[in-house]
Image (cartoon, rainbow, N blue to C red):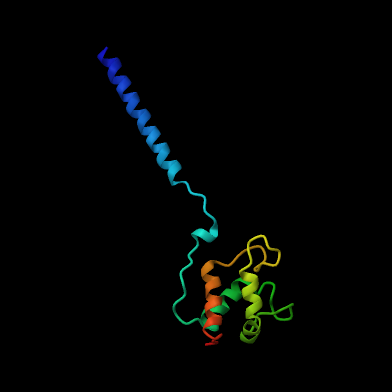
Amino acid sequence: MGLIFIEFFNMRKLTYLVLLSSIGILNSCDSRTYEEISDNTPITLPVKYTADVKPIIDNNCIGCHSAGSFKPLVTYDQAKNNIDGILDRIQRPNGDPEKMPKGGSLSATQINIFIKWKADGLTEN
């Protein structure tokens, strides 16, 4: 009889352990969007084209907006003169057919760099 009680007690502890572990795992699961989890740190330092904006354009835009293409973004002047269009397109919601870059999205920090660049006066260097 004592052995049955010990086995029952151990099974009960195991059941509680499994139950608590399951609750912990389910509680830690979270469904958040990319925008909610991406770094959206405000940009505090001055933003400059050559150091901050051009690398983003080179890595995300030049594939479609190279020299000779529709709306090229190769030079400082091209990016500066198209800043309002750039801001409009990169801030559109996912699923909008005119969102840029095509097939993806810039991070919130990258978008903030463009916004801050405009606010800072579109400085080149």
